Length: 57
Image 1 (cartoon, rainbow, N blue to C red):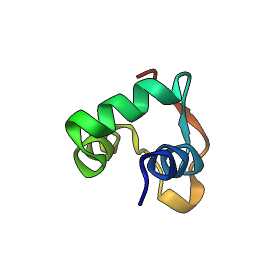
Image 2: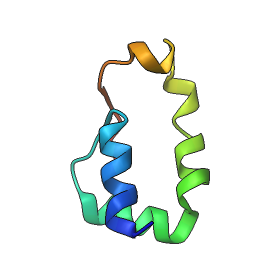
Image 3: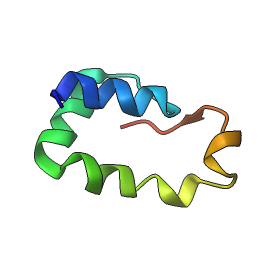
């Protein structure tokens, strides 16, 4: 999966992205799966019922 696809996937899963370049930077340096793990504390509903959440990274 390309870096741009990973950024888009996070967006499609409800992450409000202000700067795709910044998200790509974090994916490159931290990794997609480790970065996505930081979103778990914000999950208050099952994934099927999620509204968009805003996390500024």
